[in-house]
Image 1: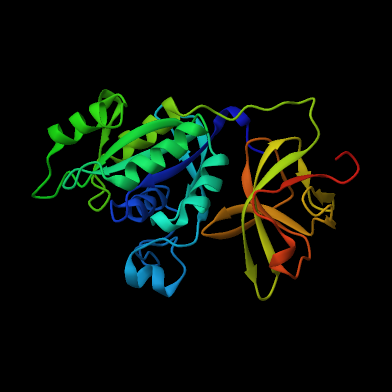
Image 2: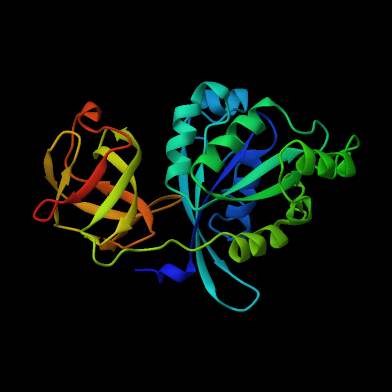
Length: 283
């Protein structure tokens, strides 16, 4: 179980085509989670249509190991949000499972409608927001104008903004340090029973329903009987672990951690996204 002080849960929010998936790719490459030979662009986008259109449809999660400049080892849980205005509900669920957000602004296009709507969603959940100015390598980049828009249109502090080029890998180290420095670690209520938020799920034909969840209080372990509040259904945890590039099986998930659970659930309709999971004996 990771020390809660070293966990950072964050999402990337942006207008469509401002470079969200590319930035996620750079984080994964920086952590050397995939060899250069096996790497492919939009690595978190699994669907053919996502790659073809360049739009993230299905929210994905990846736990990125990162060693800070001070030598501390952190676990950065990136909840990659869908990139289209039609998926506002999916974005809101991802935001609810994080403490911080990277607000990505393309400096060739500036602040746009979806940038604002996603910012308001993040503000409603009291997230710490780090503005990120992307595509600084492009010919039409206008960084001073983008900083002005961050100050005046978004009401954020442009001095906090980190300049990056997700495509070229410029400024990624500074951004990772900014995440560690500014986004708060999760808080835990040790007196409360086990509680987790289901923020997504998907169906695996070989393993059944894979539940994506964020633990807020208590500990969830393999073999533990859990209860879903919406349906009052109970299941036993068969496998629990974290998302790397694929699944990394573990034995337990503690406060602040993000991961997956397999509990022999065969119908995806049995799981309600946004539901609370608790311990069956102490709901």
